[in-house]
Amino acid sequence: MRSAPARPVAAEAGAYESDEQRWRAVRERDDAADGSFYYAVTTTGIYNRPSCAARLARRENVEFHASLDELHTRGYRPCRRCQPGEPEPNRPHAAVVARACLLMNAAVAPPNLDDLAQSAGYSRFHFHRMFKSLTGLTPHAYWTAVRAQRVREELIRARTVADAIYQSGFTTTGQFYAVSSAILGMTPQEFRAGGAGVEIRSAMAVTDTAPVLVAVTANGVCAVLEGPEQTARARLAELFPYAVRRADDRWFEARLAHVLARPAALHPVDALLPRDVRQVCRHERIRQLLRIHLDPASASGSAPDMAMA
Ligand SMILES: [Zn+2]
Picture 1 (spheres, protein in one colour):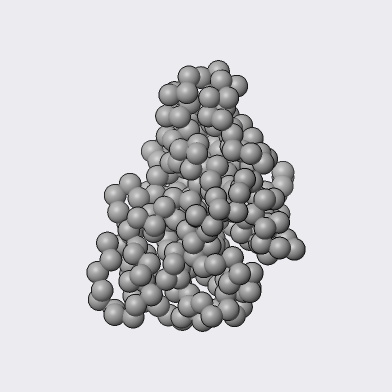
Picture 2: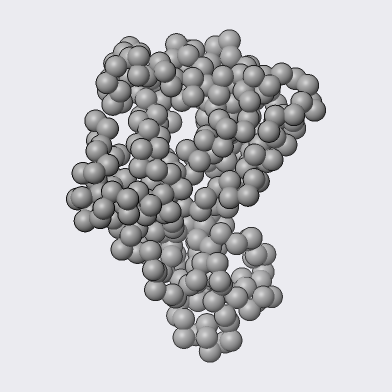
């Protein structure tokens, strides 16, 4: 969280020239590759966009194609999930919502929903509904998620806790302390001290788009980190070098899987939104679900069969 994750090199234009690069994009469900090529699965006769959220096919059954005509000539049918080659019905809405999100990413003060709606040419009601349907969050929830992410970064960088609070867009320290546990899972002092004295439980979860490492304390979620397990765990250790981190936490892993598997638990975030916006939305949904369904008090307990949700 010290800095925004770098975009993979493969996201640069013209970076899908070899099958190896294309396969990597498919494995990473890299939406920056959408439009550059399609991949067809020989065993199912279906073709997909590189970012398709469907289960990954085996490499030996995958072919890459640049042209829809060629795919159709060979008898491949489009995937119903990612609808390759279809015009994208959400595109104008996605542009409006993306603009609002980018405005909030850059804002220091809480944005006014009426202004956001008006500047996009929608009524407050329609704007709200459109935003929620594309992101899974209300505009207000998005704003608080952005501010929370900022304060987590600032707490590491800033000279004092108060500096971090004000630089992140909180208007008073009281406003921050009212939500600090939910944002940090610990006190800001503990957070700045690398989690010294704090016990952290963590587990990998599988989401539609990417593997995610979720870490909690007795007071709430302390980190949601995307990436392969080894990378995410290294990042967690970097953020909280002095915390007591439980290894191989099967109990928490099962609880996490249970919470995230609830029907409609992870509202799909529209694939047309910018990558960093989608990441904020996904992580905030995970945090929301854990706040609702995972009682932190019992998460700190060690009883393996304690019911939580
Ligand atoms: Zn697909």
